[in-house]
Length: 415
Image (tube, rainbow, N blue to C red; front, side, top):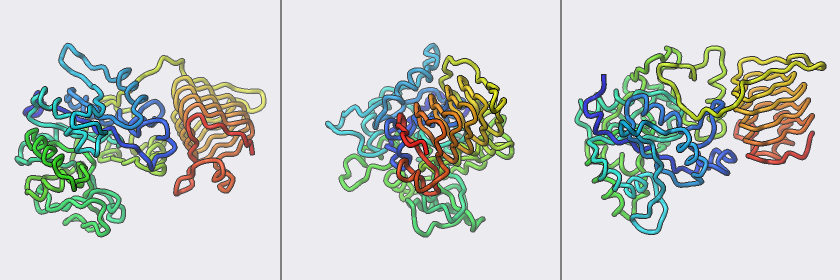
């Protein structure tokens, strides 16, 4: 059953963030274009949720280092024009002067011509870099039932983690009492003192409300032009902001274990942890839900191949994702995610690592607790993730010690 007004919905996906905390993965690409889970990109999850929900008029607002993101959108997200569907990128058009987007609210303001052309009744505004499954129609249904000006999707997190997000303080119903950006003293849920509501960065607006607010925000020189800190806060203060509890969202094919899964992958550690969630024996987030698939570009590559060698036999592979085009020769791979075209040579060992496309790991090398970006060659006998002091002199290390190696980085020290 489709919600009321589905034919009058425009979706805008905010994909212009720099992603500084994901460096060096964002050194050469926009954050939403960062690979994830083998052959996906981060943006595929938001776009798949909208497309699966039936919302297929989608504008992607881009800005920083958007080339690879633009290519991915053009190759992958080509919907049926016969039915009027589309996914298209919209860079900063400088309609308000010769300047880039000043913030997420300004990104929408600079593209209000699209809203005028589409004339929607409702507008979804989604972030582009979270890992989750969600049926947006259920949030829109609640939005219509409550008469809200804006409805904010919220996820429950432990109270100790809530200060890293925009915290929603809810009253006895769905109405939001206050919205506070990264407060030092987050207020817990009334029914659960151990958890707080945090914004997922997903909103549904009455179209006229959003247009009025971003126009007003554009004229305010003191504004940061941020959707959460400025637009949502003002609508909450005006009494028209409501919260949608994501834990009640029901997605076809979803298991009880994966219900309510949502991860903000804004740091190297959170990005790494979300990838590790995929390789559990019973993953807390499964890529294999055929009733609510995650779509992406399927490159024309041969199947993965495991080769036995005279010295190390067939090797061993356990609890790992191995993408098309990979060749593993007598290697040991455990708890890892291998992207398309990875090659691991005789006797090499890869443990709890995320390996991007085109990486070559030489014979006898050891890779542990690492993220290796595209086209890196790990020399024979190299040790990565074994000696933290040595790693710190060559690579980026996360707060928890995860090694991150940049795209095309040359590794010259084999020891």
